[in-house]
Length: 337
Image (cartoon, rainbow, N blue to C red; front, side, top):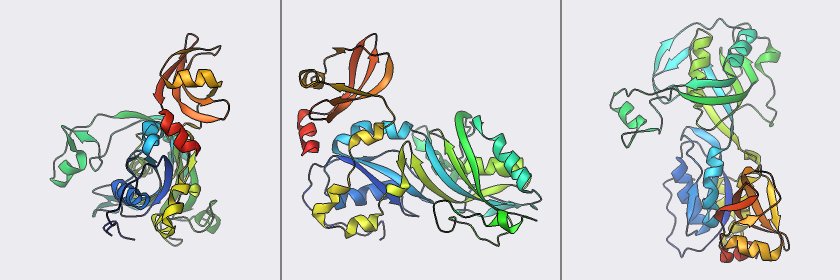
């Protein structure tokens, strides 16, 4: 399927929920969003943060009422599988541009492990010029394409974990070079006989640039590196294993496509849960604060007790449950149907 393939203009409908898409290589996040929106005939949709066209993997799309909690997914920790090509730096830090520097790779697995450990934890990152970060209303990559360098301040991010999945370097034993992919099959982007390829799994905070991490690891190893492939494998508690390709979505009968939507509260799965009896639930939906015997919490998901139904999100402060984002009674009924 091509991102430019037309979708016939058909009547829209109200659908509510989260669709986990496995974004294909070369598509922008908006390409995927518009294609899925057309296939679902959805009235309202949005994505939860962009995924680079050169990356594949998990892209949660929000439809209808679920768009109210898109920010929760945007703020969640992310998981990636990244393939680094050592010994080469490129102008953009990835495969999109020409090689600007080549150096011999002399590091062994122990040095690679030490370099990865160096970038684990709270670190400072300088956003790359080839990114969608805005400067005076324009994306940085627009300046980069004109050969303009913009001053960027470093920002704090957190790398929770870096796990080495595969390593192929000078003198690496075959067992190190061909470690199996724990998700099954060959590791994406790995060439078993490539002289210097490193595949890592990264768990990180929002706003982390994996392209910058790849370049920084290469510099720490003294040989330089660029990002050869990138796949997002998770966002918060959502996993790419549960995602659907756009081709698979298109192959479904029209009436079955909305059945692939997941409930909006899956975006909040890590938040504490509060249940309210029927009369209290109705009052909560009107936006009224409720007295509760609960400790303070910055964010909770709220449900009606019987029948169990998601109502919205709130926070608890000084014994009060304070609504933040609510479903309408009509949306609650639509998702319960």
